[in-house]
Image 1: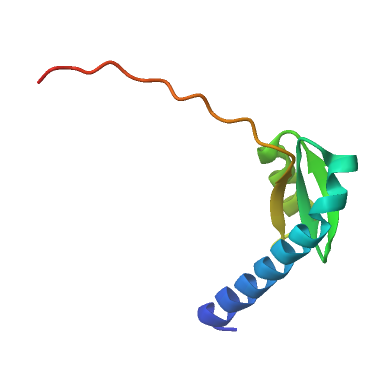
Image 2: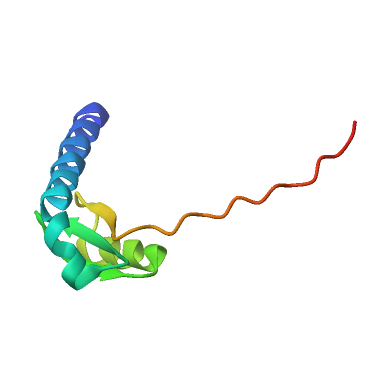
Length: 88
């Protein structure tokens, strides 16, 4: 399979899993509020508060498979901090 074909296959898989996440989103808050989820084959296959650990677990279990990682709940806004201005 060519690199272009693999890229297209990956994109279609990603879009399909993202669409599944969006369809599942209303019911996910009851069980997965304030954590990340991994959606594979149209369902949540893993979850956790540590995004990097979730990603590592997924790829260890499923290899190079289509997946969508999403956050369930309201993300807390990142506070904006002004940095001092240094005259030139």
